[in-house]
Length: 240
View 1 (cartoon, rainbow, N blue to C red):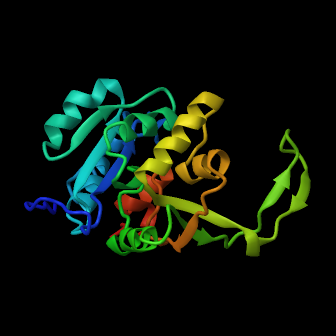
View 2 (tube, one colour):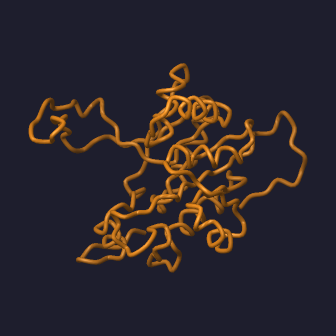
């Protein structure tokens, strides 16, 4: 992890803090426990692998990890170089808990630990865009036809135009003051949005969100099949 030993001046770039969210139970992964503690072929857990990507990135100054309250002590022992925080009952409240540990003047990268293979170049693209914007989303074009269906899921209502659709990935990058204000407003409004660009889009619509290309290697480990693919089971190659 990079460290700055000289006193910062107004001309210096702001501190960059990576906020990694690892509070979910991961039940769909069917791994017999929290998916963030599953050991990958590298020998590291999903959590350790994701954290190391950011700890080793030259532009990241600090890492904050949000886990469920029962895992705080274990995670802190595993990763003494990071700040470990207990999350809330929802993803939105967990992000807010982590943001409370970050200075308003910082730049923050918010990332789901379930994406442990994020290439460093994606992090660079987010930070480059953040130099001219206050919020940045990481996206991929949709390669599949997407239907809007009836609430009961039994019929097609509309076929959406793929040219206007993007698949959201993380990290997403923000000026900390902006995302903290958006989360404060979201908490007052209630509900639980599933990513932080959505929080900004809904509660700080005055802030334009820049979009940068993600990476197909930046997969989200969600189901048992995802973990099988990472391990090379069923004839698939492991993710590098």
